[in-house]
View (cartoon, one colour):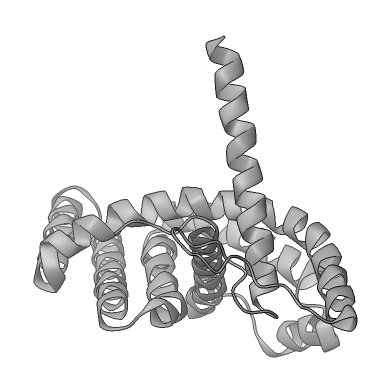
Length: 247
């Protein structure tokens, strides 16, 4: 019985999400489409024949779009849960707290590297810590200063940069780290050139103009971190459209 109840609850939740997503699609073109609690007006519908036909056409077009978008909404739910945990921690610390915590963590790792590793390893950890600290502070400031647009445009890319770039920067100084990071980076770069960056021969331009070595790895991963941050931010925003976050 409990299993059937859980399955029924899951089906109801999916139906609710799909309905809200479809209402959001219709709200792009028509007023008062989203259901509001205690509203006496109800959903707006056109009165003219032509308007009703157009309304139904857009509603039909929205059905497959909603089906295609819903997996990304589910990803947005998961990403929102993680980002809210990080956001609550950062909000409780404040910008100085975020700066001090990052300096303490990476400073401690740098001291350990100085005592146990080679000079190259010490430089690697120190450089990675500097990148992570700067990116974390910029992500925090972008999140606190602006609204949703600023958060998606700047905070998420800086957050991804804080995750992606430290290992790459460390690889510039550490042969051990570079043996792992650089070959995998080259494989990803080849895949991107062959499958993603083929528009208007952009792949050929990049291959002839740039060599993937040294700081080019940093530029590559920064170029990956920014759009990945935008994508995550858009998916989280999409999840908020379907199920608005409380607080």
